[in-house]
Amino acid sequence: CGRRTAREVAEMRVLVTAVKKANLVDSLNSAKGITVFAPANAAFEKIPSATLNGVLNNNDQLTKVLTYHVVAGRLSPDQLAGTHKTLEGQDLTVAGSGTAFTVNGNSSVVCGNVQTENATVYIVDTVLMPRG
Image 1: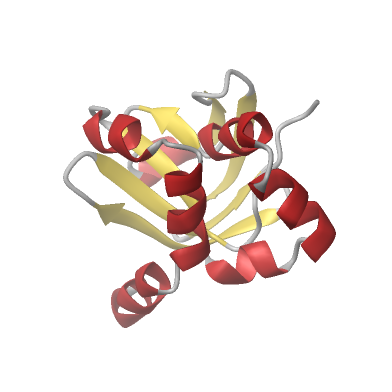
Image 2: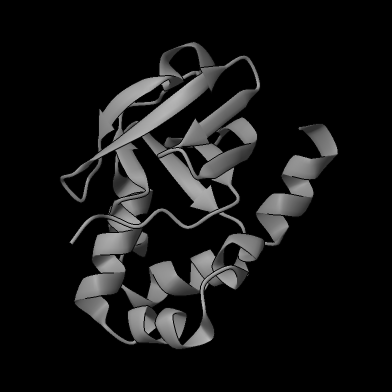
């Protein structure tokens, strides 16, 4: 994803705002070896504004949604396909191979295997919603 990585990461202000609002900055920054399915701003724009505002204003629900995007362990592309337990507690399923992956059948990985100090990041085009 090369240049797209820098642009997509720079365009993740909604996710950053949500993580701060849910008081998850310290816990995510201090977590050792995680994989994050990070929704780009365009992913949040797909959610009706009333629904998005409802989630952003309900800390418990916001925390549940955000931790559903995080999996323990740094998953490389060759480990990505399969079912993975999220920090929220439910499973998410990744299908595909190479550079073409989907998450839960409705979210595409638009850029992947971005390495940070403590995480491997896969930028997705749809916000992942846990059941219930």
